[in-house]
Structure formats: C-alpha cells, structure tokens
Length: 191
Image 1: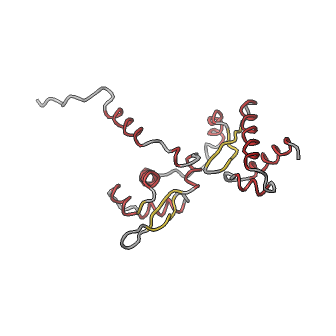
Image 2 (image 1 turned 120 degrees about the vertical axis):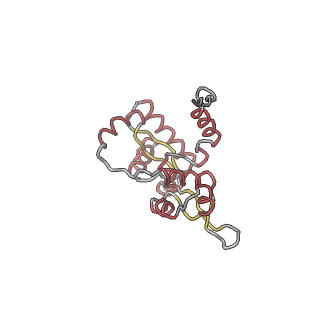
Image 3 (image 1 turned 135 degrees about the horizontal axis):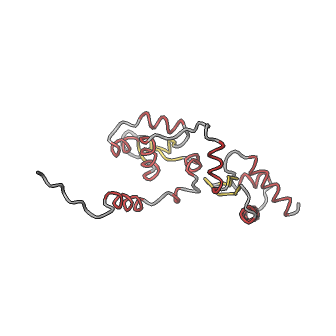
C-alpha cells in the first residue's frame, strides 16, 4: 500500500471513530503496522491540515487521536449549535471533580472532608456521566473504595493526560491576584 493510501486509511479510521483512537487500535486495523510508522503518518496528516488551513485538525486526546474542528472556527460552530442542549457540570460537581482529579486515588470521605458537605449525589452524577470511576480500595480499615478520573474525563476537558492539568500553584497565584489586585485594602473607618 502506498503512503498516500495509508494516509487516507488512517484518516478514514479517525473520521469513523466517535472516540479518540489509540495507536494500538489503529495497528490492529492496519494488520499490526509499526506504531512509529503510524505516528509518523499522523504527524504528516496533522501538518497537512494545518498548512492548508483546513477546518479540522488531528489532536492527541486521552491516549488516542481524534479529528476535531479547528479552534478558530468555534464562533461559527456556536452559532450552528446554539439551540443544542449540552450537559454542563454544576459548581459542586466541578469542585468535586477537581478534588478527585488532583488527589486521586481518593475516598469519598476524603472528598467530603475537603468540601465539608455530603457528596453522594454528586458522585452518582459524575459516575453516571462516566467522568469518575472506582479505582480500587484503600488499604485501611473497612477497605473503602477509592475514586479516580476516566478517559471520558480527559476527553471532556480535551486533555492528553492528567499531566496537562493546570498546576495548583497557578490557581494560588491567580486567587491572590484576584483578591488583592491593588494591594491590601485599608479597613473602613467607623463613624
């Protein structure tokens, strides 16, 4: 098979897949072709799309590759899908998910102690959406379940891996800047 045909085959595999496609799955579809060769073709395709300023790109997400729309065209897609219902995560769900993402594997009790509220409903919702999963059991009395994020979590947030999560230090800096943009505030004078 010529290299152009291989490009077309890999492009078709990516287009047909509704989830990020791992190199291993591509290898299986391509009769165990060398993973390095597949990665090289993927890089060529990525470059081709970017050079020709196409409306789509190939990106590496959640341990696989996927065809996505080019970020520059987001305003047009928003107009196209303005009436489309999307499941947004509530603030409590985002807070809980952030704790799990940064501290995993973590028990439900540990999350509850950090949030100071019961998280049963939030955990159920996040598990139902496929964003968290039971990752094992803690070696502690009662052997409580520990939770972690899923590949669906990486897809939802467009991350290759957990290493791409923003560093907690960046949040601390941003919060301190937000709280005191002009330095410390003077206490109000009592009359």
